[in-house]
Length: 403
Image (cartoon, rainbow, N blue to C red; front, side, top):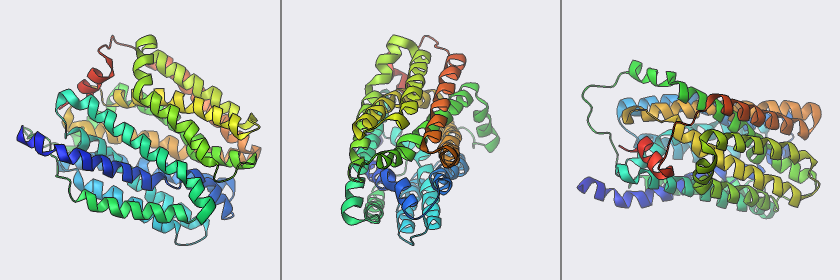
C-alpha cells in the first residue's frame, strides 16, 4: 500500500510528461505536408515523409515491447521517446531540403514507438480497480496535448515562419526530459520463472489480436491520409491560410475527444462493439469521400468534425480488444505487436495516397482513404463478435488493464 501511495505524485508528473511528449511531436503536424511541399517536394515525396513515421514504428514498436517485458523495465524507453522527439525537431531545422524532413520524420517515428511503454507504465501507478480511470486520464491528456499543439501550429508558422514550430517542439521535449528524472521505475510483480522470448512470441498468434490489429491498419490509413496527412493541403488549395488550419484541427479534435471519452461506451450499449465499429468505419468512409468536394473551409471543417467523431468511436474499442485476455507480463509485447501492425497504415496509407494524388490530384488520396474505411466496416461485421460484455467501459478496462 505504501508503494501505491508513493506513486501518487508520479501520476501528476507522468501526465505532464505525456502532454509535453505529444505536444512536441504534434506541434508541426498540421503544417508538415504543406511545409514539405513548400521545400519543392512532389506529392510522392510528401507521401514518403508522412509514411516514414509509420514505417519506423513498424520496425521498432514490437522490439521495444518485447525488450521492456524481458528486462522488466520501462523508464529507459520513456527517455528514448523524449530524446527522439526533441532530436526530430532539430533535424527539421538542419536544412531546407526534403531529405532532412524525411530523416526528421523517421526519428519522430522512433519517438512514437516508445508509446508502447507509456500506457503500460502509467497503468502500473494505479490499483486494479482504478485501471479504467488511469486509461481515461492518459487518453484525455493525449488528446488535449494534440489539440493544443495543432491549434497553434498554423498561427505560429504564419507569424514566425515555417521553422518556429520545430524550435518550440524541441524546447518542450528538452524540458520534458528533465521531468522524467522524477519518475520512479515500475516493475511487474516477481514471476515464478524468467520470461522467455518464445513465450512472448505466442502472444502474436492470438486471433482477436491479429484481427483488431488489421482493422487498426485501415483506421490509421484513413487518419494519416486525412487529418494528419493531406487535408491541410486541401484546405490551402481552396484558399485557406496557414493560420486558419487551426480551425480545421479544432473541428476534428473536439468531436474526436468527446467520442473517445464517452462515445464508445454509449454507442457500445446501443449497438454493441461490432455495430459501433461498423457505424464508425462506415461514417468515416462517407466523410473522407466528401473531403475533395467541399468548396469552403467551413464545409471542410464539417467533414473533419464527422471524421473526428467516427474515428473516436473506433480507436478505444480496438485498443481494448488488442490486449483482452493477455497476461499482465505479456502486455507490452501485445501492445507492441498491435501498434507495430497498425503503423503499416500510418506508413503505407499516406505513401500510396501520395502516389494517387500525383496521378489524380488530391482527390485520389481521399478516394483511397474512403475505400479503406469501407473495407474496414465490412471486415468489422465479419470478424467481430459481441460476447455479452457488460458493466460499462470502466469495468471492461479494469479487466483488460488491471494488475
